[in-house]
Length: 459
Ligand code: FE2
Image (cartoon, rainbow, N blue to C red):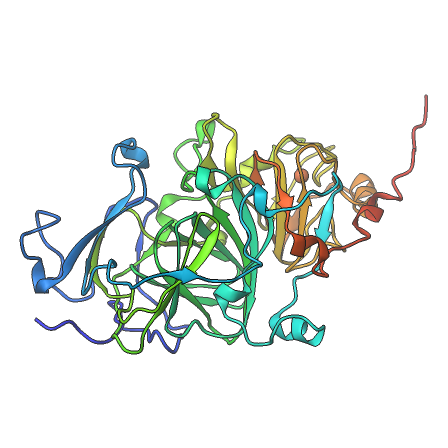
């Protein structure tokens, strides 16, 4: 049977070259064993690799864990594609100097708290003498902070993107880490080997290490954050005494259904491996998977479905109670990276200072703001910006937030219309050269604590 020639999720909603916001079909459940076919009968039954696969498709295994990883962590997917992904052509070095990797890609910085103004959209950057105005997702990626080492499969980078051009006949495959995409402004159509995802601010997309994908904006331009996780794949945190429900529930994670597109003009695939970028020109679209089954898959998640837990008596729990996903390290309870959100929630504690307390944590904290205000920094921490509080760097509410929270009537209070997030890592971050000198650094950040006077009143 001839292969169909259109990109076709099972709801036939999408055209790869003209992203739309029409509703896509998804399959539900974090880590589930999915099976999906864009053409009925394309998926082999009862075995993975028959002598001749249905419709003369090529079976191809993509493993996301070592073959012998424990079953609960084992991830792999069987792809049935029109041509195997070995049909590529040679790769050549690709220059994208802003996407740096690991501790070695950063620079030394003093142990000060750091904060960045909103990172500029491409048009704003060009107006200020920055890069060219038209840029796509890949070329817009910039590392803000990073740690670890992609070759050692440990650590992570926090990146930002801000683009206004589609990735026409262009795709990205990252062998260094999975990509947790956190949109801040503008919705995204994410085309992957396994199908299509639409995500908007408030949602996240998770692209496994090694899955080829491309990103376009629903409305021309978009901005957001990315955690490039070199370490163990993100998973749901253990719930302990919370029990069998709560925080991010598995059923709210959505995987795509199979979709494939017609071949045509040559494709350029950018591969990242060992901290370096490479490009090729291939006659084969990487989005030619007609059917697949397995549990290694892109996912999307709407943070509105996060069941937030907090104190209903006094004090507030550690922010680990807001963990959506965790990438463990080899030390129990000490994450390579936790993805944590600060969503809308009720504050009802009695006799309690309700914002975050002043603290110095051994874990390092990179934060971003999707929309609204963050309760510890109502003014200077703005949507599209970021902050870094590295290992044992003191921080906490600014002076105005401390004064307000110390004196307000403690009636039940809804923190609403806000969404902040944190990438928290056991490894100290190093900012990139661009982060320190690219123009977005808030040179006056530390002044927000300057008005905290000694108010000690001995009895
Ligand atoms: Fe903190």
